[in-house]
Image (cartoon, rainbow, N blue to C red; front, top):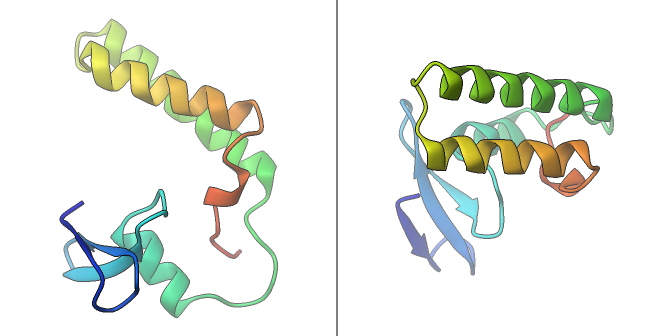
Length: 101
């Protein structure tokens, strides 16, 4: 996260990626690439299936555990990744996955 701004949206922050900067709502839990997807590819009403989101959370958690066990991921990032994956797998955070199929 770069900065919180009130110029483009009342409450937004500037996120950057390899393409450049983009304004993201300050309450959003995603970054520049997801915002670009929402801005330019918001087609139809079908969202990514919850089963796919759960599968990604399972994969991310397993990768975090393996990298932590292999000493390639420090304790704090490992703890946070596992915590968020567990929240997703418990059915929380359903509103924060807005991409369309």
